[in-house]
Length: 338
Image (cartoon, rainbow, N blue to C red; front, top):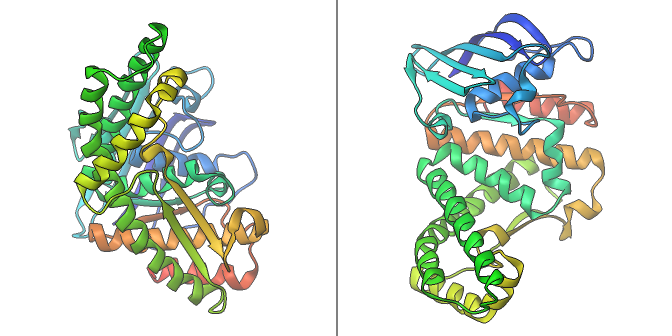
């Protein structure tokens, strides 16, 4: 699958532009500030229904305007043409159209045109805490598993409801559980179990592919590892539920006082190690970037296997901080589809 052309109107600093691409390596070049990253951002917006740079869709509208439009044309694995559009109007919000059909829920767009995206903003994943690593793997899993995405969205909704109720209990100075808390726990447990199980198995699979690519590109002597440390674990659902309920029962008064849950998938930790040392503490800026690029290659490999179609690779400023040798290896991996 690849993108043939994209047409942008009133997007970021671009008033109107149309670009055509080939099925292969495309390089967008130009002076700083002319809109190179904005083009990648527009493609990302179509695939994830949001920007990778801003939380507000209004920020994507060219100054002085009330809307933006994105229209793109793709070729799928069977050489069929797909037209994908995304429109945003400040007074009405955003709408997406896939192959002539309006998308009812924005989440339905995720995974339809899988991409592997890399930008300077991504380096917080390797240098920052577990929150950024969880977001990274959640986003990747959401592209290849619609069920995972649905569980994540449901978990967010129920967690907000549970936290709001904890706040009510705190105002009432009731620092112990009740039937409503039990209901929320029963609703959220199956979601957390499925999310934990998929994270656990997926990160193990990802770790294997990452290690192989790291040895091919960087070094066979360096030992690298991606480690998943869940807040709650268990060999089966019953054991997982028991472990969760034990921690909640022992700490419900703290949760009420703080108005939030203290255990569950939002507290899972993911760590990166190089020769047994945490990457964020002992790697140079160039090493962080190289690690992230190899993660993206691993990501593309898994998406291609799971979705049975090659993802689109969008790399923004990929060669800064990398030496010539490693840059060539990464280009070869992408060009040869690994």
